[in-house]
Length: 330
Image (cartoon, rainbow, N blue to C red; front, side):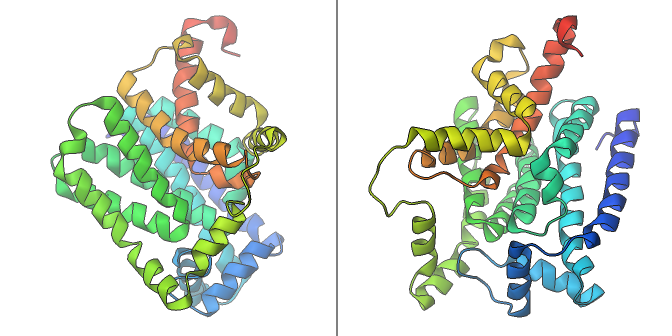
């Protein structure tokens, strides 16, 4: 957060507060969708692991219901508050790596993105997953700029909670490693990086114990869901369907803007290190599901966390392009 309350900071906080109040009002006007009912059932039978996911969302719903009772509001409150937290994390990332203007416009883009707008009302695993992913991205950046071990440990803890929300949260460790390789500044040799990875990996121990006790159902479920138990047979139409779905849940203009910014980086030159970090947050998860789509079309929301970096990368690139070319500012 900027040390002084700048106009962009005030506007961002006011916008997030207004949107949060609207979501709190609106969220009770919708019936629970299937996934929400499924996770609500989990919250009535608390455990440290479940068939296909970790326990984070079940415990969050249970905590909210302990305060507000077994109501739709209690269940949806989890999504609304996590969604607001994700918006704040996006703003802080933009401010920390660039400035409050980047942070403000990144929040604007996130708010008008269908995937994040819906995700901030419906209480699903993606809401918690993206929240912890976003703050882990922030604390990792701070860890690379500090000698304090607490930033590394905090990042490992947040990545672990992301993994407990959705197991693909572990892909963020790949994002961090990719950034360290790109930068070549000795980050891979820093003890804090490996401590962070170790803390995150500790969160895999309970799911492994649970699966061992129950005959490894999670691995079988995930392999089947990704069609990895079927004979490899690349399907081009699946890839096209995946890309169309991504454009639909993000918005065609924003999706096209992200891809253009990645494919033509020289259209707008931006600080290399900071831009690489946002790109590293986007590419591994997106490419994973792009490759998976050759075998089986991934669900549109599976790439949600990748767009934290993708949106910030787009805003940074577009601001530089708009500053250089007045014809594109509109």
